[in-house]
Image 1: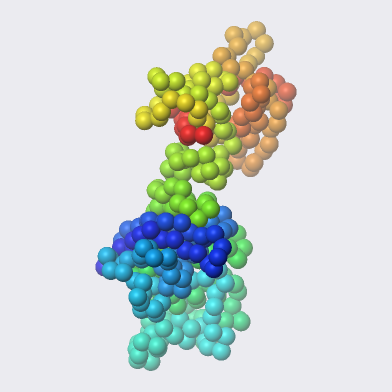
Image 2 (image 1 turned 45 degrees about the horizontal axis):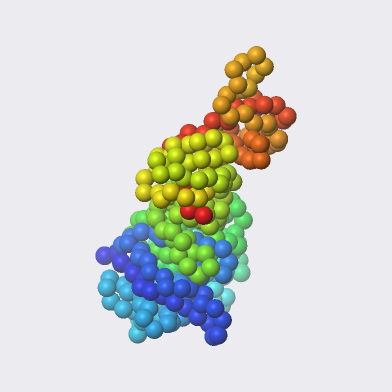
Length: 349
């Protein structure tokens, strides 16, 4: 049965330094892949190490598996397997022996170990590689062996600490797909540590964003793009259009581009920042002899990104970035700027 992992009020401190993690409470639901996302030093690896049993939280914190505390258990008894950024394979053992190492420690018979190792090597697309030594493998192949070894003991928790960071982009994409496939097939509850927003959004069922040791937001990946909890979240997820505004009591945001009636309940009047993703900025022609649109801007820059065009448009003192599939506007020309209120998300300053 898939495991339910819950973290309660975790604070982790190394020596006399400021806490690496502050009062983190979070859960990984049975069978889901939860991404711990954040910049370097945000506390995500400390969280993983605490779950694995290598770091203890301060008094009052707890790590529970299906409601049972793991704090008194050593790492080898926590039913968790850990895959690091750099695969730590035994150089003197064959690939198959590396995969089967944990099974040997559990007393499984030689024939059963071989059968299980062959099955897992097939699963990670390394069938027939069993007799080789780690030094005969590429970096991507070694990481596949590390993944197979982690899954060999049928762990209830799979802990992945930046497992794709050292791989080339093409290999990284292959490994991401493989991990997601195996994780779904086996239903193992998984924590993935990453600093890559796209990786978290692509792989995870839910994302937990840590900044400065504190949880900023958690939920489905799309929430971070469409409904960031605060300005730090919006900036981490690449928000390029941040528009200062004042929110009136009737829900109208007063901006340098004019008033916008927001479709976002629950906001209190006062200063806010409007987050508008570039793909939601609409540009229209402002041709001579035609009635001018309500808001007119000047195209300052146009870049071709392969499948999209990136425009920088100034409206007074405001610069907006727009992404379009076509390139009908020239640098220096005037364009109409249209913002749909339902695409705008406000966060408190």
